[in-house]
Length: 331
Ligand SMILES: Nc1ncnc2c1ncn2[C@@H]1O[C@H](COP(=O)(O)OP(=O)(O)O)[C@@H](O)[C@H]1O
Ligand SMILES: [Mg+2]
Image (tube, rainbow, N blue to C red; front, side, top):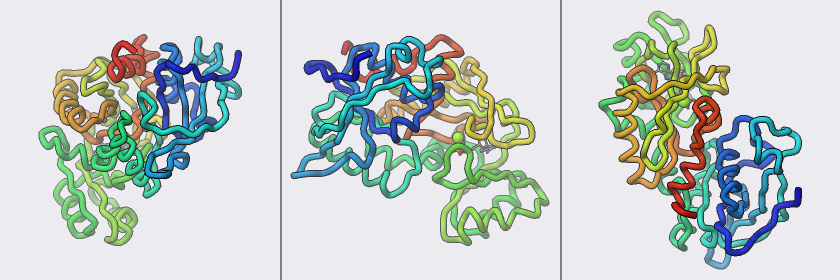
């Protein structure tokens, strides 16, 4: 096929992502969004957070036109991982000149990420539409934001103080300790009653009392999976992806070997989704992934939610298409 070309007059969607060659063609949710945009014949560009600059008082991006090959557009799941897209040369543009900027950079949520949200927020001031809202990406730590929905969260504590974390374990006996800024299950520990590792887990996660960590009561229903529910414009996709931990493992994350099984939302899932969805939408968090274990909300993913591809495949959905139609109706 021909290389990507810019067709002036088209809708222009810019994706802030990790390096294009680091995206996994069979799994990546951003690629589902790109495919949905290309099916709509929108102009698609990509850039990294390092390609955003404040220059002469305006927020500029060094973007590259991006196109899936015809084969990949027709069958992304079956695409050749070594050759499925074309990139144009970098070109400078004001981010406010795109119709939509999708912030899809994966964590780490480090200072570079924070600075990028500041620049993107300036672009919003200049008229850019950025999803998710950069200010809310900063405000809504994925573990802490969930604790705002108290009716739905398991007993928990957030502290850097080892004594408070020890007390929490003494009270609840079977506890999951985790970092506030982890992803993919990294640094997540289950500590049962009488576990000799209790103190070292707390010392490690808090860096000897210098860094806040979260403890939650262990939820036994994790054996039935950690359910991912996606919210588009505050409304849930009607199916969840239950990520079931592999044998002998606590963590259901697909990145930790969990197996994804699609299932309809329960009434409880719907209630949790409604509460989070309403709040998230009001904050400009248009695409969110909530994690539900048993009856409990454990995490609200806002930076770069995934599981689109798995749910699309299991239920014949087009979640990314629904998201784009929600964001730019009629485009
Ligand atoms: N309170 C809990 N009870 C049981 N399992 C949990 C609990 N919290 C986390 N887990 C397990 O650890 C995994 C990762 O935890 P999570 O809080 O989702 O962090 P991450 O951001 O790394 O995905 C979950 O998918 C689940 O399998
Ligand atoms: Mg998780």
